[in-house]
Amino acid sequence: MRKTLYLKFILAYLIFGLLGFIAISTIGSRLVQSYLIRRTSEQIYKEANAISFDNMVRYHTASYNLGNIHETLSSLAVYQSAEIWLINQKGEVLLSTANEEPYDPPLALEGFDPITWGSSYYRTGNFFGHFHESMLSVIAPITSDITIKGYIAIHYPMNSIYQEREHILAVIHTVFFLLFALSLLLLLLFTFSVYRPLRKITIGAEEYSAGHLDYQIPVYSQDEMGYLAKTLNYMSGELNNSGEYQRKFIANISHDFRSPLTSIKGYLEAIEDGTISPDNQEKYIQIVLNETDRLEKLTESLLTLNNLDVKSRLMHLRAFDINKVIKNTAATFEGICRNKKISIELILSGTQLYAYADMEQIQQVLYNLLDNAIKFSPNESTITIETTEKNDRILVSVKDRGTGISKENLPKIWNRFFKEDSSRGKDRKGTGLGLSIVKEIINAHNQNIDVISTEGVGTEFIFSLDRMKD
Image (tube, rainbow, N blue to C red; front, top):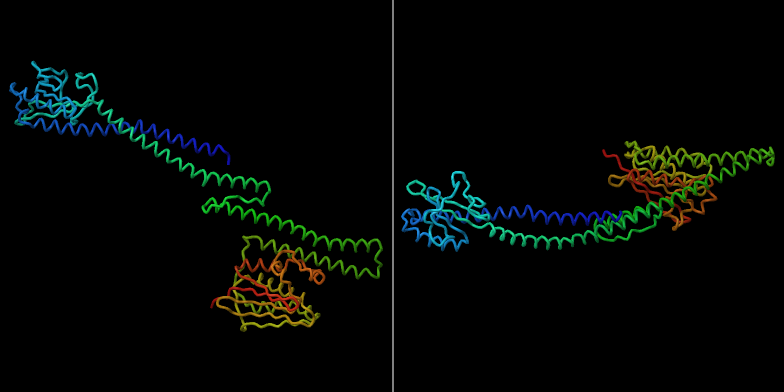
């Protein structure tokens, strides 16, 4: 993440503040002014309407009353901070509180026509050119016997409204700036809880892309950023382990291919150049065939593992008799068991026991486990295969009385190409992939496999399968 992203965020923050200030100064100012005009016009209209209903005003036509009316309205005008006019039916001003005396003769207003006001009871402006400044003017008719006798006009200076507007806007601006200043805390919170951790995560991603998979992102917060960093650290560790595993995998497979190829090449060259006499050639040809079988078995095991590694590989799940599969698998080892005088004891639950799994894959599991048991069992020993039922599961056990596995090597037996040192001499044809294949198949079925082993006593493998429900 480049620094420009953070600068863009700050710039957007400042632009937001500027736009907020402009909005308050323009739109806000207009809204406040409109509100003040409506509120003030309502107040003075109520006052004008009250004056128009005063009996002394309604019967102002007698000139001797104008002096008393002027005195009363002048006092009210001072209280309202406004100018009050009394206008006759002809549109002539009889008195104004701005003058000390009533007009004599009345002051004519050019263009005065209340009908043009329509339903509005107030206007802003110079009131037919009479004032030199903008005024808020309100008129209320004076009626008597359903006849309009004149009008009460109250003029309120707009400057007073402008001043009140500015006072309100000053308060709004003050509150806005305080909130804007407080919102800086959000910017600081964003910096420390989002930007800085994200920056560290970006640095970590750059390290990973450069191949430094052992790099640990130093973000330890208990939020989403901390969880992301923890996940990436875990991912990098797994990738690092995977890379190490691949290096070991290539080294192991190179070794396991190179050894038989070297033997095959050496013996064939010796036969070709006559180093090995024709009388001994049959012996060494048999050795070459054995090494070829080893290469073939290794290739088949690798292909099996490759198929199991494909996550999208579909399993052919169906019900089958696990007891029958065990019997058929054991029968395939009859020849080698006869040669080593090894007996296979079957302790099977019931005549038939139906499991729900991929039969071919489970047969491969049984084959690999039984092959291992025979391979590391001494002559004239017994191998026991047992099935038991437990709730909705079937447990299958393959137990030998062979050499056993050391305690330190027990966790490693599932690793590909792993061979215990004590088995190297006994298992020249082994690939070290059999138990890896078993583990992959059992995991693909979402089942478990365990091993119990004691050196010099024997080894027992136990795996579970789903039992077919009735």
